[in-house]
Image 1: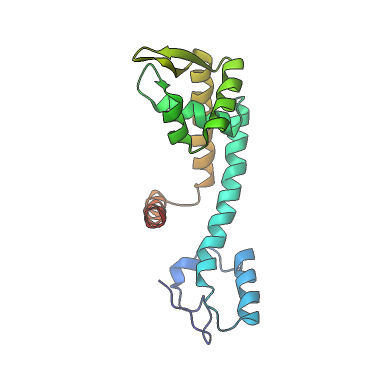
Image 2: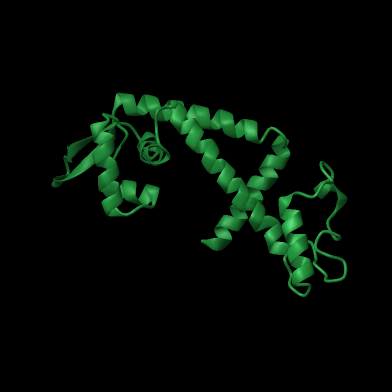
Length: 184
């Protein structure tokens, strides 16, 4: 970790390799510099990471929406279809399993499934183990669209990461994995 000091500033302790690619300040640097002047005793080092993560998340949201749109899907449709696509053949799950996989509420899932059924991307089938419940299965059209969306997404995300070597990508993934695990 880089130590922050009110005398040295938050970037002075960073190794040269961190900024080797571009020594220009970005928007986050400028924001942190401004707050450092306003609140000189506050350690703003976390903003260096978290503000960039927020910006990357926003950019990723736009990238994903574009990839999914190219396959004729909305992001929420992709989430449900992807959960079904990852399931073992015949690619069916209960609504409760879909709720768990997509982390949305029951009412929202019912609405989403109604829309996906109308579009012919999924179908509801009686659960053979329990006549009172249903299973949701991916249709052929749903499978084609979700596979197309995943291909488009993988291509666009690879393009976004083109400036990082495989080793840098692996390092970043490992660090983000730790950050996610520490917050769960």
